[in-house]
Image (tube, rainbow, N blue to C red):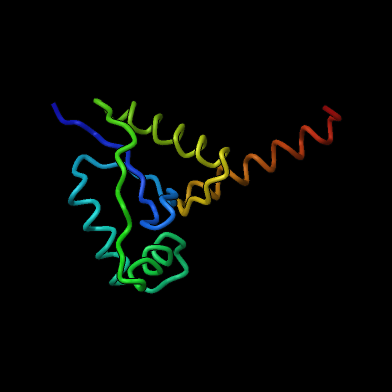
Length: 116
């Protein structure tokens, strides 16, 4: 049976998680993140963050957050973890974290207009 993993990439000095992802091969995915950051210069928050660490002659730390047995469970758990970390104030670089923040602001505006 193939295991799937949810992982975080953390700053090696602050230990704060800045990215949450999923894979079935942690080592391969970690190396892909490093190579992607070294190969591209862009406005992508994740790439810029990884490059800021590499420029300090450090590498991000990969932290195993959860293991899942199916892709369905994997996708649900990853969203739950991202949402929880954002609610706790983590400054994630995930593209999906921007969507979650926007949805949260939208819901807040609706609730405010209804005088809850």
